[in-house]
Image (cartoon, rainbow, N blue to C red; front, side):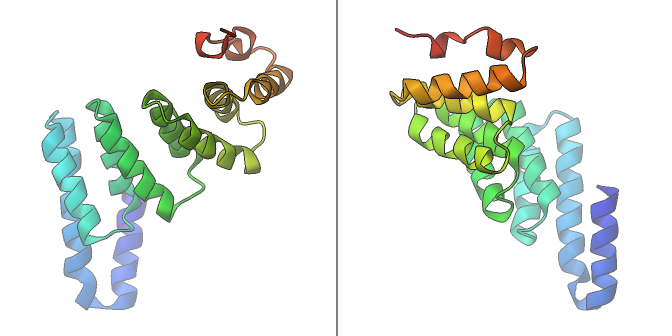
Length: 174
């Protein structure tokens, strides 16, 4: 957070004082959101983080905080929507792409989940979480061979990872 405020401050100095109220409003809303989150006022936190994002759409810390509050409060569909918006700005946010894939699997949307895990595996073919997610999504879409390949790749690269040695029930053959 301190780094972001510093960058915003430098940005204000470089661009001139005309944008100071804009940046200050986004920062104030973000800080209000953090305070509300600390007080377990999750709806207040959501409202404040959304306000910060409305004021400054590229305010990544506010976007990440909004996702965190949605996940913390169990609102996974709202988290998925916020993650989708985040990925439009930062498509390489692998952790959030994995979370989105997991939510899509929970929502019985394995084709869409498969796309999320595949995206990660294109640049990081040995990402353990993406391999597991891919295997689960592939199995659910009827691609048992691809699911088995992903699990085998995971077993080869992560021989001590129990997630690959113990086949999850969702991946067992019916």
